[in-house]
Length: 241
Image 1 (spheres, rainbow, N blue to C red):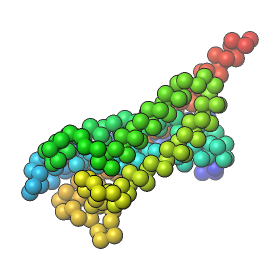
Image 2 (image 1 turned 60 degrees about the horizontal axis):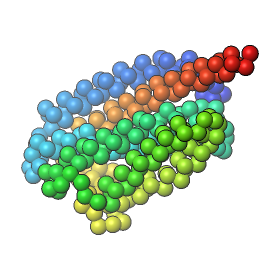
Image 3 (image 1 turned 180 degrees about the vertical axis):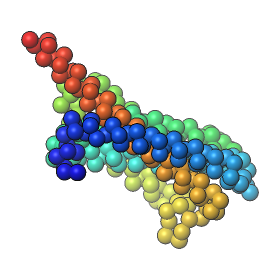
Image 4 (image 1 turned 120 degrees about the horizontal axis):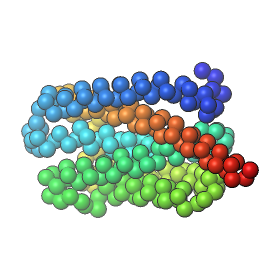
């Protein structure tokens, strides 16, 4: 597909419709398989027991909270540097989705932390940096609501997103840089995964399924945003007539 097709909102609406249907089917099937494997196939942990099953939901949310912001940073760069017509649409559509996933990561992490750490919340480096990420998401949403001019709001949001992206590697490497209660990397590490295969495969399926779900939500959000902007343009034309 030519790059011009990807940059044209009308063409995007055309080819994204069948893509969205495929994404939803894959996401639902993947989540069904992943949840079944997580709750009925994977055994309890020898230390945490059944509480370990929160991991299969928490880890995908945590991964997507960072991946979403990385996606937004790339889109913001595309908007500021290359003026890609859909870049700001993608960044704006992804922002509330990333905020929701980050919130769910914090909630599930707190529920997991109570039986393992003895408290729902500690000012751990990883938890604190994820909380900062959630605040940045909320700030971006509030900023777009506060600035009436869509073009100016897009530019300011893109700059703030690029500045805020510094927090993503801080989250990623916080367990290595500081003394933290949060466990270190246990899946994608140099020495290989430290999780048993009976838990690793359900977790990988859940991560993959949630990533596809994220993609479906973003595509759906982009389509809605394009239609919203077209309605706004028509209203402005009608008001000026």
